[in-house]
Length: 346
Image (cartoon, rainbow, N blue to C red):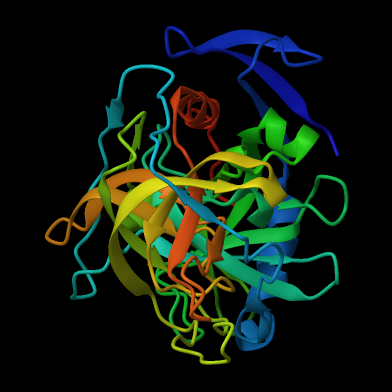
């Protein structure tokens, strides 16, 4: 696996131009290839779309690091700079409803050789080709930081359908501290994807266009107060500790809650954000936390990504989702991903 480390100028919020062999300062982006060539991407698309998309339909929710013992804190995270907002892009308002068309499932093959999925969301970027999810839904923590195999995104996924096509990942960008030190305070990733494709009955790939042109793209916000309210969107599927299964994982779910500062020492989570949410862990990894979400435009500002869930009141039902706190370093990692062109594989 080839990894590029990019030094990032955090104080001015500018992407540095120097490529270095080691992180030059606290905030560095690790950039890794997924399907870096068109033939490789075509093979990935064929794997998921063949036989009536059997591998998509048979995939199971990813069950790695889904639950933590979390603590709610009364203190606030201290931002490392001024709050920032990057505006979203509204997509076509179809199908009817109030849920974001930007949400979907990310699919990949895990260390066990089996197909799995997490949640992801389309993001605003220069070439309208960016997906946000949890870093451990891109990087295989069971194989010393290798990327997960055959990574794709399906926006609007519902019961085996690909309404806007399937988007193969070309490049992944995360924080250096996650891949180097398994620091879950930095468990977020941004993936550049090729144009979407669908497969005909003769297994010919047809281009469906750029991701954000088709579904819209969420904005980004960082250095916000940890006492905000957010809408959480994801595909929870797993059970509660008491065995109940409130979600199927087949359709997009929505919850709303207040955020607060959280702590999870077992995963080195010292600056996390929690939100009141009943989502179970399996399937909801990578769920988007949208600040100022509008159900009319179906857009908002990404202010968190579910990396795990917790039962904080001991009633054997999950009540809290946790995310890294989005700060200037999050913005810097995002900035390292926004300007990569990808193109078509069809």
